[in-house]
Amino acid sequence: MKELTKTTVTKPESKPAGGKKNRLLFMLLPVLVAVLLLLVPVPHGLQPFAWHFFAIFVGVIVGLIFEPLPGAVIGLTGVVVIALGGKWLLFSPEQLADPKFKLAGQAFKWAVSGFGNSTVWLIFGAFMFAAGYDKTQFGRRLALILVKYLGRRSLTLGYAITFADLLLAPFTPSNTARSGGTIYPIIANLPPLYGSKPNDPSSRKIGSYLMWVAITAACITSSMFLSALAPNLLALALVKSIVGINISWGTWFIAFLPLGVLLILAMPLLAYWLYPPEVKINDEVPRWASAELVKLGKLTRNEILLLVFVCSALLMWIFAADWIEPALAALLVVTLMLWTGVLNWNDITSNKPAWNTFVWFATLVALADGLSSTGFISWLGKEGGALMTGISPSVATIVLLLAFYLLHYLFASTTAHTTALLPAMLTIASTIPGINMQVFCLLMVTSLGIMGIITPYGTGPSPIYYGSGYLPTADYWRLGTIFGAIFLVALLVIGYPWMTMMF
Image (cartoon, rainbow, N blue to C red; front, side):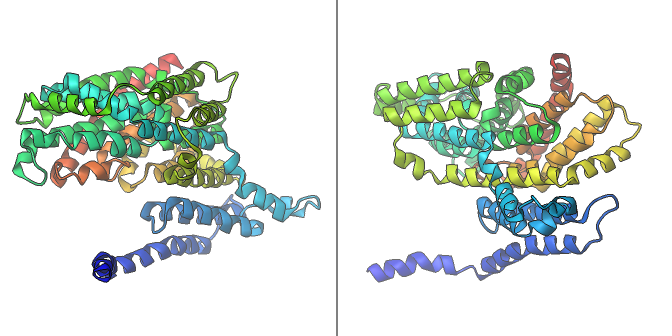
């Protein structure tokens, strides 16, 4: 029987031969792209080593888009290749001619530079907060409480889902973990209570509405809080590195606040009008949530401690950034969680998503910094700025934002999108006379969350809800276009004037 079980389990894995061929193709594609770019003549005005660095960088981005291997492996490979070829990829002839310059030591120092970046450690700390929410089940409790009190009507249930995501977002840097780990497992139980089934005409009774509200809420909250989406923190590091502007947690929050509040309040109602559920009222949902809360029992000691700790971290991020580095504040809270037993050391060492993201982002920060240090970014800014000569600062801002937002159709990863396009947009904008760079940076970075709504692959939670069986392909693309346009117009009409006035 054991042998039969093994055969049954392993057989499906060896079945798709085409899948192995595709993976091999995807593994070769980044290499092929990098080699082709290396063979292209170096553009005028750019040093050869900078162009060679850019070729490897593009290969890494292609690898992140198709992901034949985990993102961390792709990023680490790029860093190692460039460090090994530092003589031709990383350092100028002038640097190499200096007798005091130690090639091997400087190449290694650059390769690991991303691991000392404070933003990378802030991301890691925030992942530990999310682990605390999961282990203590405090996140599940918050969601169930909202469902209990707002779940009788379909519309208010939509608001319950939205507010649950809103409460979790400031402390969960992975919207995939937030949606896939807490929100989705709860709301997946709700449609059957209404007789709404996946991949069935009955899905429109309420399941479709709930799933669309959930993915839309995840996108809005990902833009609303700096700490609600991991690429937000990467964008923060890129902005500081490329244009020297530091965006704090509070600045980010204030910049998006009016638009965020409006979208949070309007979105469930818009979905109710544009994608209405057939069932409007059901008394079973609040009863189910009440029963689940009874199973959870009273608020535990660890839940109370977690609440105190994460609120303390949030206060330090907002009000004490001048006295304590936000990353250090996060590590302080993680240390307190370990000492008080909210988490144990095994929770830290076994958290694969956190370590994977840590390595991934550290390598991407180093690669993005290399684009700047080799002179590629300044050259790109000069060339891009020349193309926009004569355009007013406000028109240039809108044009660049539209391009940045709509090009997300080409990316299945917000991280890859940020790494590939944000440095170019920042550099081009910095060459345009009269442009308000702080406002421009805020527009760019706060668009990262909301742009995830436009496609079924646009952000981490998208495949989860798309694969739920409640959102048919045609519906998803249609609604993604509608809501993506609404979000973009709202950012331009409300967010842009507000940020201009405030900053």
